Length: 556
Ligand code: ATP
Ligand code: MG
Image (cartoon, rainbow, N blue to C red; front, side, top):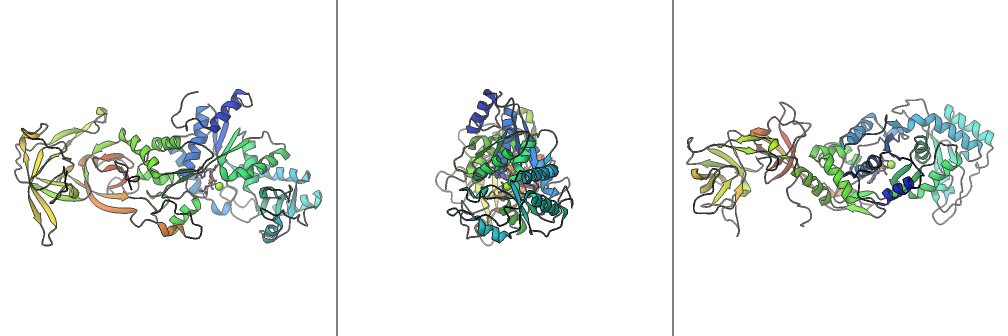
């Protein structure tokens, strides 16, 4: 077994698999990732993807991608495509073709007929509301439906007619016949087929009955020879039903369902339904808005697949609550980008500097490498000129104690360039600083100044060479840690109104030709990623801030 950095460190699922391989229960493992194509994948799904595909990689097994497409009204081709893109982008490859639960509709139907013949399923005429009343509660057993004792022949006839479209939507359902008094409500004769005249993305109008998730999922697993069916904890109470269905039917194998805890991230939400609401109500620009915790949003923001996989490894797999601070994700991304992103200079809140002693002869440009530890990243010229942009907050007229940046009469080192002294401040009529008049020490290019120490180093750009760019700075999407904690309050109330600020900044000419999705470190500012929508050849340059250089989350 190779050690795989994308796999969470040792955990109970891994131990279970090791034991199953050691005992000979399985010769190799087959897992699956089973999303419903009813939205874009989010960071919680990334955890599940890394687990399922990571285990398959690590144990030399296989992992299937299977769409759980049993809810035609909510599903779309666009979602299915985006899910495939996301899984591949994260760096994983499913075994063989993509699978669809709808590929098994005929088999699922035949198995339901089988259940009826065994006296283990019946056609129900009660309305949904009546069924709810008959179901009982957590403390009270349910009652048997008056239709529960229909004969096999009658059930076979009615079920065939359900399929044939003889009944209205919702008029009947097929129910498993288990135990209306069970302590587990999932076993109180759950519905396994319903009538729904809805166009399906793959089967079109071929079916007007659709199998329910619990019934479909276990049989699909069995048909695919899944050995370990991993899901989140809310399905723990469904496991007896999973096992019951497989125990009744002549399926090829009986996979083992094992549950682990869902990932929840502070200051965001991990529910497709709620993310869809953000998109529909236009609180964000789309599923791939860089503030979204979707895989496509994280990608557009500049997160790397390696960083996300490392995050998944760090949070681990267990059955205990898995609520994680965004700082854990950002830490993993930052560490990955540290050695991966070329370093350049950009100015996001510019103030103009005029070099009063600029003189072509002694004001030279210098070559600078793109990464201090990666000479293979190459280098570029950083052009020096008479007019510069520096960051407005790198200058203070009345500096606080310990200030190491620019002030009147003080000196700083311009990164890759000269030591510069601020001699004079120019203000507009309102008293706002609009320009700094500075002078350089021509003897300081690549050398320390004689007889004095200059501690501060600031980034800058030449005005005539700089390229305009729109820079999008992101903050947390919600202003409270658990926006959906209170069921009676719409989580949208807690949206952070300052989650996006757009500034017009400047970047080095070296990034002009950056391909969409190129990631940079803008020195002293953070990691930024060329937008993949607007940053097209000839389009406007847009950079999304991926993450700041230091953790700005945990210090509050
Ligand atoms: P959502 O509640 O966001 O719609 P879901 O569970 O309904 O999610 P599915 O498409 O059914 O979405 O999920 C596919 C797989 O991803 C399932 O096995 C599910 O358990 C897993 N998964 C979904 N959300 C999380 C999460 N927050 N953490 C870990 N795994 C998750
Ligand atoms: Mg689901």
